[in-house]
Length: 99
Image (cartoon, rainbow, N blue to C red; front, side):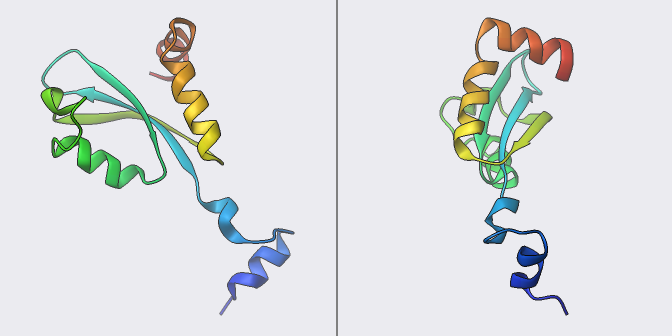
């Protein structure tokens, strides 16, 4: 049995928190030609909430498919990347390189 602290020590880490990722995700509506870009620390939970109509911004477009997601190490990186993908040049990169 491997203890949590042992793995962290073997990797030279203070804690295992580095393994908790943040996600930037792209949803595509199954009803309309519409995409949504968001970020979260719990991708499964957030995807379920979008499909359940619990988000006012996406409720009219549910249900969704998950087109892509990108994992990053911090919330700030996720928020910054989400913001970038919502710009003209970021959206172009998204369409050309990721979607």
